Length: 429
Image 1 (spheres, rainbow, N blue to C red):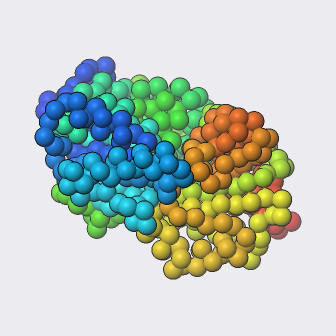
Image 2: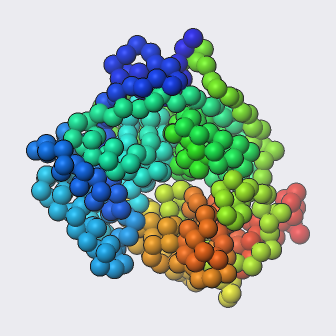
């Protein structure tokens, strides 16, 4: 019996011929990172180990993105600890405010995570990079300290669940809708410590930005990692960016999967995750009409260029509803500049949205866009837990950028067709 994509990558990095689910293996790590929340803890533990410096300066990154630009003295001190460590060890991969961005978008953009590699980060959404065909997973700060010191990490080989998307996605159905549909079907613990392997011809109809949205949310189903085999589109995206040589890895045809789930994407429709769980998934049309106080487009899940393009398409020539406020945050400065060049930023400003510098910010209720009691937000982020974006009595609906933008225009949860004046069948109303 052959191995899955995840198993083959782990076997290669453990230096063994094959691995099986449940085995413990010591793996070589190709790249690792921490952010301004997790880095200070990792640095403290790293310094206890007693090594002179990190295992490889070219394979460690530090990214200030959660509470940066700093919102208060405490967050400034967190970033200073990280900045001082970077300077002390002369680490090349650190980006100061103005050049930094949301880590999970920035590191891929910079060509630092590559197909066939093992990548770990002290952040749960490190799973994001599986769209490149890498084994990518989040670890605790103490584990990251060990990786920074040794370049290795022990892992339990996960079993693999395979999700196959057939056909061509229906109108307005994006990668975000596909992954929310999965989470709604299997539950937030349905893939606990499993590798979620995504496949099928429908992926060819998705942009790389949409594919990242899918792997990014694998952790919301309990997944150890999300992963896709790199196809021509993936390799065309990676090659101009890659900082190192890489070798793509592909699953064996006779690989064994714990479970296979198949979808006809042409029969799906846009969905939202209603408060207060990513697994509380319902079609947008069933939730439409809920008054909305705030709309947020951004984050590592949906702050990429294609997301901004989709949102701008709905907002062009229209205005954010008077009862609603809208915040747009491009995930990296490069995305911001391209959005500016394409006129997307102008569209957002003309519509009455606020556009901010690249940061996680509102996603974690850290700063900007924090919700008051009883307020409702439609967000393109990944989590809508109680109190996630502010007051415990606030409510967050998770959606893709089209639904978010439509909701901003109408001041209530809305399907994009409502803004464009179409019926469910696509006929002018």
